[in-house]
Image (tube, rainbow, N blue to C red):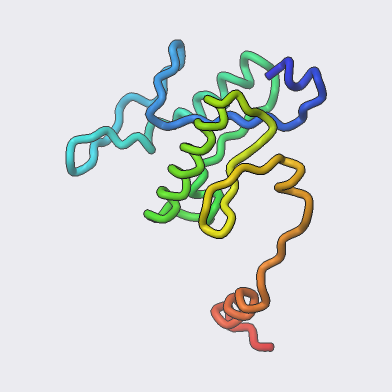
Length: 142
């Protein structure tokens, strides 16, 4: 991370699964179990633990984001979890392929790869249909 920052890369993305075991890092251990007896991985908070570790080791500010929450602004739905799984899988493939400076994106329901520059090149606006729908639900007419 320090090397990437030294060569002028201001944006560094770390993708981590809640199930990951990182030597020397202990995530939350007193966890609830689901109805099948499986540990609730969403309670491990490995993202927060790793972010603190990165900041302590590098001095670089680190923020954790739960993808499902970022996408919808609330508790993740089944679709959020599936989308996050697809993005995570694609991110792992990119890492395995040794690719950097790219990210998984969704286009027409498919997961594809884009450069950061491509991803932010243009402002993408909601269609007028979506804006009208939001106005109706918010009670705004016209």
